[in-house]
Image (cartoon, rainbow, N blue to C red; front, top):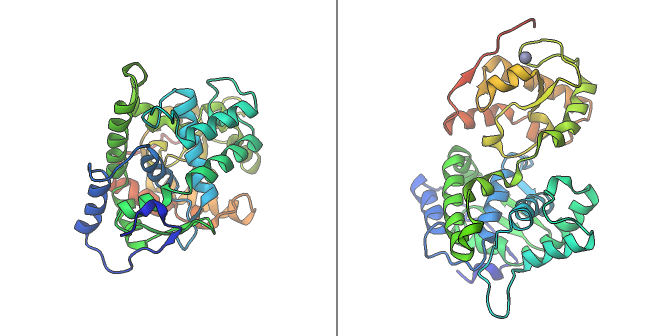
Length: 332
Ligand SMILES: [Zn+2]
């Protein structure tokens, strides 16, 4: 295959694939045969994995969705944690990505350690645009080629990526394992290019690069509070806007994304007890019905994603989320 990073567009190989073949494509990506002088491939794979449930019904993601996640991951790793993503050379100290982030930061006079979530929407959009312009040139084709042309089709000009349905199923089934392999190789790369003092808690820094603080979830709390009665989704206890918490119905540690169709309002007690577990299946039906209402009211505009919550619940179980939590009901 021609050098992948030069590709402007390509199509996934459309034929039946065995699990062995699909595992082999990831084994190659995570082997020493896959060459990297930046960490882009790992970051871009994370951007796809974190967006796995945000595709439309044709499994298409647009570059704005992908590079917004990519910009967020790298903003937090580079500017918040000061972790270099490229080995500093004599002429070229920083990667194009790092330069784009620093230019964005300087343009807005942003203080050093501000997390991405604290930027205004306009700033986020502008920084995403800068990162996309630099990074779409090589990373999309490079990851395509390293995965043997099996994972996705893409067009750099039209700015979309379409996941191969066979690989989609496979990746959903093995998401947690693939994510862990990706973090491991990424961390190994970062240990090589950074000083020892920077790389403590490296795996948590990578994993939590898109974790929002509780206060930034207030936006979702307000919508749900406005649209529904002020009761805990699980136990039915009345809650006030002050005391209520926003819970990821499918745990954040699995989904790695914040979408209204996965949020419910919970009392602190239920939120605290549920933690990283799935709720009993009755509540899956309840949130599914709730999402139907949000779709009807146009509160959710990507109906495809909202309709997928039952499948995601199953995939979470297949990925090791076996502990099912049942709340103590106060009333229905
Ligand atoms: Zn409760």
